[in-house]
Every structure is written in C-alpha cells, then in structure tokens.
Image 1: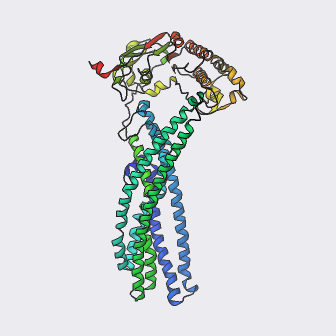
Image 2: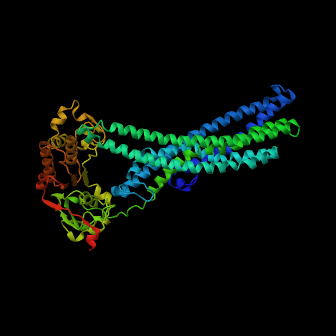
Image 3: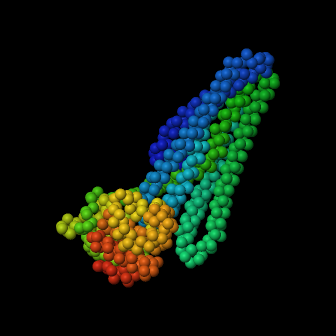
Length: 567
C-alpha cells in the first residue's frame, strides 16, 4: 500500500471526503502559517529597531491575534474530522471484512491464504487489528497532505524574502526523505512482525478462553494462568519494540531537521550582523524555516502509525479481494415437501490428500429423522456444510426434489442459499446463543410471535421446567453470550426448545446428546421425536446408539484418499 493508496479510497468511501476536506484544511493552514510569521515579524521589527509602541503596531497585532485564533480553529476542526473519518472507515472496513468472511464460508476460515490470513486473522482484524487505521487517519495522513501544501508554500515565501536561506533549505530538505526511507524500512518490518505477533497471541488467547469450560470441568482452570501471563508479557514486549523503533526514528528526524533549521538561523544571523539583510526579513525567515520542515518531520514521526495502519489495511484488502463463490439465483422449494438427494457426493478435505466424504449417496425425506454416522474425520460435518451450500462439492450432485414432481428437481448450486437458510435451524455443539433473558433467547427476540402455551410446551418438552423454576427471575433471568450462566446440558436443552419454537423446516443437530447424562438425554430424544411429529425434517450427526436407533434413515459416511480414488 502506498502512503495514500487509491485502493483505500476505493474500499472505504468515507475516506474520500475526508481527504478532500483535509487538503482544504492544509491550504488554509499554509496561508495561516505564512501570515502568522509575517505578522510576528511586522510587530517585533519596529519595536526592536525603532522603539515603536503598542499604538504603532496595533493593526498587525490585532491581525496576528485573529490569525492565531483561526489557526487554532482549523487545527481543532481537522482533528475532529480526522477522528470522525477514522471511526467511519474502521467501521465500514470491519463490516465489509465480516460480510466477506461470511460469504467465503466456514471452510475458507480454516484455510491459509496467499497473504497468510486465515479465519483467526479475521477475528483479529475485526476486533483489534483495524484500530491501527485510527492513528493513520488522525496523525499521519493530515501531515502527509500538509507536506504538499504548507512546505512548498512556506518555501516559496522564504525564497521571495531571502534566496540564500531558501537555497540552504532546498539543499538540506532532501535529506529528510532519505532518512525516512532508511528508518521506514526497519519500521515497516517491525510493524509487520507486530501484526503477525498480535494475530498469533490473539489466537492463543481465544483458544484458551474457548477451552476454559472444559478445563474447569476437569479442575484445571488454574493451569492456564501462567500461560496467559506469558502471552501478555510477549505482547507487551512486541509493543515495546515497536515503540522503541518509533521513538528512535522520531529522534533521528528531529535531530536532522533541527540542524537544518540551525544552519538557516546561523546564516541569517551572520548576515544580519553585517547588515546584508533586514531585521523584519530575518525574523520572518527564522520563523518560517521550521514550518518548512515541520510537516515532513511529523510525517517521519508518525510513520510507524502509518505502517501499522497500512499492514492492517493490507490484511483486510487481501480478504476483501478474495474471489467470492458464485451463488445461484433460483428460489429454494418448500422443504416441508422436498426431499434432499445426495448423488455420489465427494468433497476434498482441505490440507489433506483425502475425499471426506467420498462417493456419498443418500436421500433425506421430508418429515423424517435422518442420522449421519461415521468415524471422526470422515466428513460428517462437511456433508452438512455441503447441504447448506457453505462448501462446494468436488464431484457428484445435490438435488432438491419436490415430492409432488420429482422431475422438476433443482441442483443445489443453482439455488440462492439465503432462500434455503431461511428454512433451516442449525444447532451446533457450541450453542449459538445471544445475550438476553431466557424468554428473549427462546423466542428469538420476538415474544409476541409465540403464545404462552407454545412456550410452555417447548420448555416442558426440552426438560427446562425445573431449571427455570429454580432461577430467581424465571424466564426473565439474564444469560450471557453463548449461554453463560447455564450448564452445558441446560444450553443444549435451551437450543432444542428454541428449535421447537422456530419456524425452520429443516433442523440440523450436531451431536445433541454429547456430554449429557441419561436423564438429560431422554429430554433431547423426546424433543427430536416432537420435531418429527410437527412435520419437521430432522438431520442428526450421531455417534450414540440411542440417537441412531431413533432415526428413520441412517447414512454412513466414509472417506477415501485421492490416490486410491483415482486408482
């Protein structure tokens, strides 16, 4: 990415107006900087050389006060709109990254891309990573635009006042970009390593947090404390290394520009002593010289902020430019009267020379219970993802056939997946429960759409009656994201009760009795029977014999190596 990459303006539309506005602020700042220097010289020169009083310099003094106020207003407005633009850009990029990741599907989230980004990088970008664009917009970009407005304008004024000082500036000013490039190479590498480190550390922390319930169940929740402390210290060291490089780069550029301004000041002072230049001109040149270097110096000082922002944007852009899967346009038929036919379906497993599932042929009839079985790793979950158009199949076909007219079958790849998903209720092993009261979670935030009798029936069916009665606020009890506040078994039963109340025709259950005792398992089995009695199509990924015995149809999934398949 360039310092001001057109791709950023293309992807993040709020950045366009901000760049134009900042350029206008830059032009105004250039005029005010020049006016301030000239007015200060016009006030001080008569006082020093001629002993002028306040009345003699009243006019330029009032004008100077107005310029100072105007400059403060322009700086404040620039800062305000910079913060606003950065927030808007970060929010828009965050939304686009998440939407793109959803379109690419769950399989893509587990795959490394050409840029090294993966699903966990999406999490990092959508939380902490893109925040690095804030300093880029607030600090770096305004200074970059001031370089092309304030620097040439003030240099032109110095040239008109004193050509010798202008010549010194012209000779020394190229040294600043040279040192910026040298320092920038080190800074860019450091920022890249910091982003990679932050992604890895974030992944490990999230893994630890996700595994805490399991660790707690085995009484090992104290163990990760040391590891979490180590991760925190590693991130602190990574951040401190980045700050160290930033401070050193700022010191180098500060020293260089200070020496350059000193050369101009010494030259002007010597010529002032010998009467080769006037006091007012000398004062104006000495005050304008630092303003020539200041934007360039600030660009170097904030360059580390730009590289962090650039690294974050590059990771986001790599995701946004991934080729999206081609979606069908046909409307999915009503699944209550539609059978799903899998015809010799094979899907290549990512990162493995394996088809999982391999050559799977099965028919899922409406209003029945179908159990998908098989050893771990054979492709049971991939089969479900294929049925939902979340994973492309490599060979075979999946068709949707209405029971009334099987000849008018639709190939799943021609179907708009959103019209299919609206008829599906998918209950994974890790419950997808949002925060809220039990009533809101059960009714999907639409309590008015569910009658009291329906709610009571679903609660009794899932075996939640005793659980809710034991809670102080009953159905008005608050739970956290993912069902925090409830046990694993209670969460499973809660999701099943919600499935009973939901309108989804196809209900997919991923090991719904895993980690449950016999008493709780009975409630789950009763709920599955009730779903079938309601006319729902139930698809269960199952290992336990009790679940398999409940099914009308059992589909056994196998895998096969690609080499053996070709042979």
